Length: 179
Image (tube, rainbow, N blue to C red; front, side, top):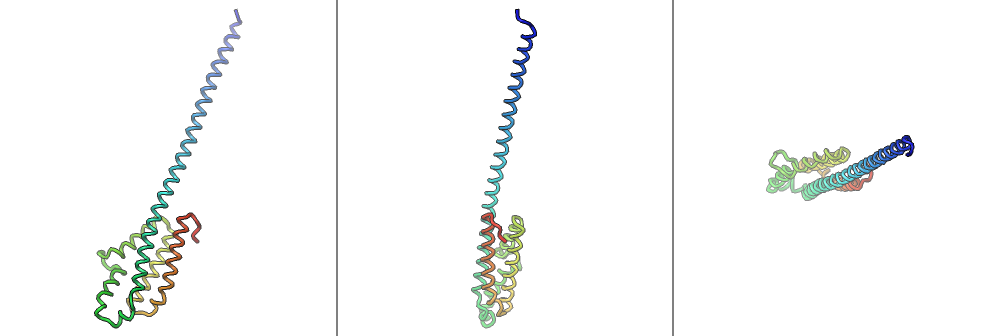
């Protein structure tokens, strides 16, 4: 009969080998789970970033479209008609009401303000540029309403500024530095 200590040592070695194997398997599964969680979290971040970029793209395009329409309306106003033709003054007043939005019923101008507010939520830096653009266009609108000749000379600068704003929005959406 073999020595009982040899049998006991063999049994202990077998049990220890089984325990180490179980620990190794468990540790391997834990590492795999951690990697899967990290991969899933990174995937969620990418999906959220993509969804957010699509949202910003839609917001920026709506805002630029509204500002383009506003600029087109500014260009369409003939300053001479403001001062000479009192019959057209009524339609000009309606246009000025749209631009200045003195009442809540005037949706197009209020929508610009809402879009500007939404831009403020998604990008503080871009909001400052948009706010400067709206201020520039408000001043030109006031000049036109006052019959000032300076408004016509401001329109090319406003157009360049609006193009620069669109370019910086595009650069931000592409992940570039928009400064």
